[in-house]
Length: 282
Image 1 (tube, rainbow, N blue to C red):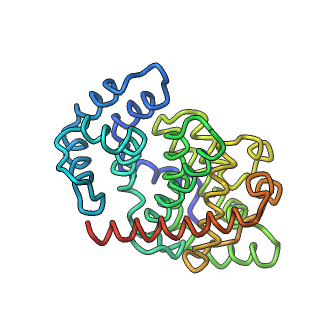
Image 2: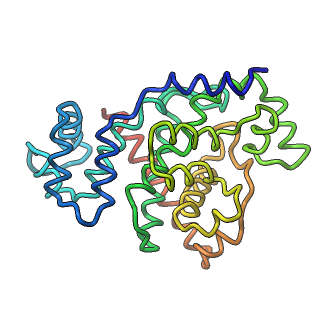
């Protein structure tokens, strides 16, 4: 079996995060920053500006006029949507690959991550949570550890699945026991190396709520629930689907009426179809 050091060495093989992402997140989270500040940061990067305008003007977005500037894009779509587009366009390169150890084909993890991010944003808005860009970004990157770990999981999948089936472990617990590392902890290590905030690192590390205290952090609980909704809908995708602990108290807190959960699952399917349609049209 490969050692823990072998796993950690592979982190350096990931595509780096553009520095503009940190600037965008800082400005989006700062109530004292102006719209002009954010537009100026994005416009300084020609590649990001070009890709963003291409997306905004795509048939999928369906705007009635051609958009020629970031300022115009923000005025027509709103600041939050433009920020999300910038994040999505610049955080996906690593996640678009196949993760064979997890049974994920090329594009599966990225599509799921985008959909979970949209659901997490929806839940966060319903509960009037702050730091929407941070929650959205953590949702996009929650499974970044799988990009590295999937090859190691493939080598030890029988042992991992036996621990899940025979000992009642969650998939992430079995990963840690068999490999010495689980994808959530590895995701936190990667987020730290990419210089994300301590809270975002915490959300990624704890998106399966292994730390009981995480259940009391609204942002982390939101990310957990969005991820669980994805698992309940996408039961046929990935070897680890539903092999996780269900924290009923968190579900009860967010969804006192079971119809609310059913409605969110329907929302997830709709968002998923929308994203898949965008990929096909691209």
